[in-house]
Image 1 (cartoon, one colour):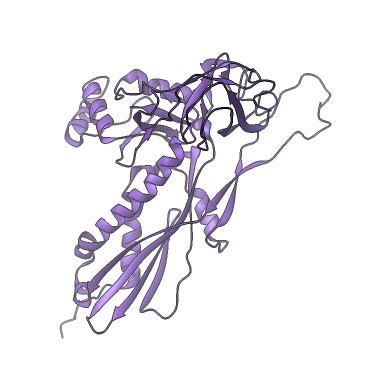
Image 2 (tube, one colour):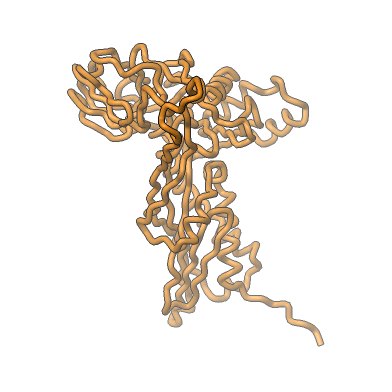
Length: 402
């Protein structure tokens, strides 16, 4: 007797396939750190829960036998990530379409749905990254393409001790990717790699980075900074805080605006010596300008084991912003994986529905819920993801201006 090999797709088939597509649909999602997600999801976290991410400790070296702190100078630091963003994609299909092969069902329904969901998550990641990274290369208004630009991005990460461990990436807009492939074609690459670039139109690895093209790269319109700012009088920034007072200037600042302060340089985290590169400060909260206290994306330390500026922020000192006021510039990104975390948590499986299933894969959790309408023989379904994003090491990321 012949065996009936006909199979109707079930919730597990659909959810696992959707999650596989989601994981691979976007380069930025693949390149950030998701290792914290499984541990967070295992706690049964709810919407709005907080994940405290431990950061590496830093120490100061002293000379002699006597410990200056009386013994233990370890100070634990962490960064709080709120998992409170829920996004979903809804769809409908007839019962007959569940008899499609998984490949056909995936092509017709899952791939387009997961593509748009992945792009939304990636956009949130890019917004967080370009609004927090505290270094930059390139020239605002000029599409990046030169070997030197990407080499300088690697230099910035080297100075900040980001490992060269195969986890560095550059995410470029389609425009920047096309310009880079054209500028680098045939230069310092093997024949097979050049052939791959010609065929794919995507840059291969270069200067220690993996290159990815992503339409989620953000374009930021700079704030309307109409006149020059200076740092405030007295003590513009207190060591161990993430604010800086400014005076004399006018015009609003937006999240992601970057500026330098004359004479203030970044330092190597290990040696605490100046790198010779002006320290970049990034605005973390929009403000109306004028005499204002600016919220920064990074806590400033001018002494101690976490020192990250060469000197205390001087009073009444010129501030220089990057880019022309009220002008839009693409913000391509160069970063180490551990600069940024994407955390997902398990959503509850509801009762009273036709089907509910949840799957986890490589730090991503996705829920599939399906309801049946007997009148129309139509299934109403939705895929949901609950997540949060956080730049936990802003010094391990570089804005590549376009």
